[in-house]
Length: 476
Ligand SMILES: [Zn+2]
Image 1: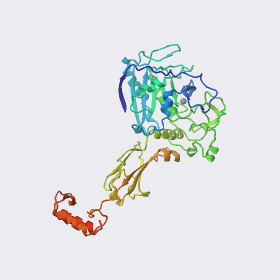
Image 2: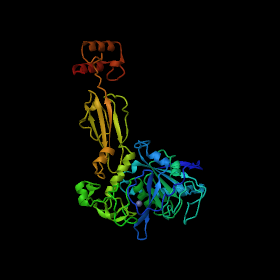
Image 3: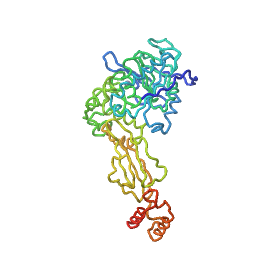
Image 4: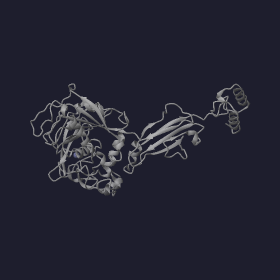
């Protein structure tokens, strides 16, 4: 689904400077970033041998983005979806249709790959047209070419030809016109191969007119959404000398030790499934080094284009989806106690190919016969004495094995306080059935009081007498 945001002309000048590289390409000190004010911007592209290659450039994270990322609650805000927002640079007013077709093309392959395929319903794709004064972006095709564009996109970023940078603050200023923003993709109006991933800013770039744009976009989302490492070996020291990386698809531990210590993707070792790339093991060479560090599969989307993700990377991406999406998409209100004969319901999120599991309990005890229901009337399940009714929804997909991910992000419960069922024959409301209730019924009946029209027929008749007597005799 694609939201049309109306054309947006010139924007106010922003005080923040364009994102400029703090240093040249970093091919030496590859390790954890100690300073949270910086991020490694990735650029990855196919080298002459067909394998991916690339660089990382250390850049400051812009203040507006740091403020955004520091907000305590991101999950479940606004629309309970992962919102991808495309913005474009170097598209003039006359090129709006080109932007539209570039967005359609760039997003055309995303949902072909697991785990995006199964979770397509969890996403919304928005396109926001941004008008530039000139067509094309800076340094295209060669350094020194300067164009007046809205987002200041440029090739040769940090001195690297295919590293395609953007002014992150300006990109967000436009992206924020979307109903919600979780990931921004900035497209350059160019056919020149290039892209970049900004993992700290949840932003990726791509050349809108390049044939590899859909694949680059997916690979960059692996970085920016899944915080995944590159699994190729070019660009760093031959032998990895750092410690265990923070990324989920790189490890210094070979399989035997990984299994013994229950580290990283130990739960996937030996796993093979056509939805994912390769048999999971520990394959030496990852994260820009050929030796001393391992990747989960021989090949994958994080090593080459036109590949599937491997299973550990897919698990990590699903964990990222569930940072923005809660398992329960909607439910009947629970802000005040409900009657036992009211209908309560939950609307779970709906992946493609499997349902989320729903279970119910009353004060901690399972409600018999209710598993799998998304809607029920408590009284119909014998819940007449009141209590706390809870629906628990969990995504038990086989694409996730880590218990902490499933328990912490993929499970959600909602509770209602259920009032005791009212007793039909206890007309005095004193909690007892006695002669006062009989007197009250007779008086109401003779007075034509429709409060004792128990069968809701609109008039008082023998059926109402029968209902009262039956309730009185059975204790309610
Ligand atoms: Zn990459």
